[in-house]
Length: 430
Image 1 (cartoon, helix red, strand yellow):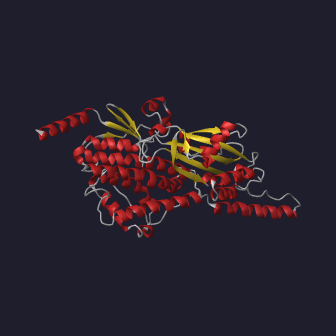
Image 2 (image 1 turned 60 degrees about the vertical axis):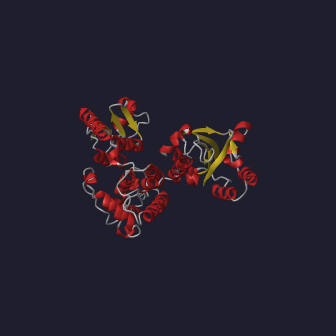
Image 3 (image 1 turned 120 degrees about the horizontal axis):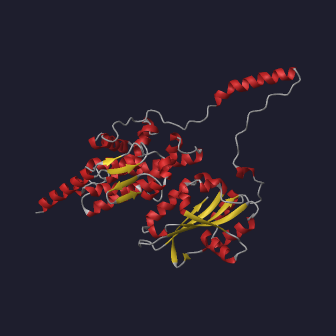
């Protein structure tokens, strides 16, 4: 009877599949979409990627906003409605045909699959993107941020390297969503930056990855993956192209001197960050960060106020907009870590203390809020330019207002409880 029932369910899914194909809205080569397309090859779910969808133009339309209120891709349109967030889509595709076992077999294995999905989302993908996006032209290159991102990618790969020492796949004896999510995120790095010398440090990861990309279900979506021979770097403007012009200017200058004329104008200097052009402040931010971090809070707060320069800096607090969704302690912690990592270009101009409030091992909700010290009269561009910052509500702090001052000091490190919630974790941004 169970077999008959399973066959009936399978036939009903096939009927649904033939009646209406699912539609995935994305841009080409989006690893967040690729993983769901690969999963669909295992489950037999028909997914159409419309050629007429244009990114990013169509994302801003009211029609697309009705499909995804966050107006980001990928978005999966199903007969029952639309789904956004790539891992939610991935899980939905896996549940389409449970007998494909993409979620693992036993109950514990399913927990392990979820564990590695979170590992990919919070430990691997954020630094992966910071390293790769300047090469792909998606974001401005920052040497310090890229260096830190590379180190963080290596840390994540080291975890995988050790885990795969005696394993063929991430969880169990067959491919699961864990392999699909991690492998999809690593396609571009293996093609762009993981050269032969780099791969020597991660032989187990490389063996596992090449096993994945040679599976027919993977080849159906990504027919060919060429391992990187030489690490790619961001395309910097070629300074040599300006040499002929500069030489010409020197010649003109020489001729002008002979003719007692004005010399050619000097080449334009690289534009400085507006915050570097502000009048010098008596409050040295690096010194304040160091002394504040190395002292217990009451003493640290006095040090801060002794150095405080209201003309050169401003104070803010921030609150996360979706605390009700923070139901797992370590996921909330990883959420904060990823945000701070993507704020790396801000470190020169800011100091902050980000708090997570809630009871460890409970279902939350865990509350995220922070106290910030920013260079300049307002919130720096480097803060607002980070996509994650839009999920945090900012409020300026007036130290003359006792309530605002008390809240700022509590979030800066003076409180072990907030609104009745104990402190779970506190991270300094310095």
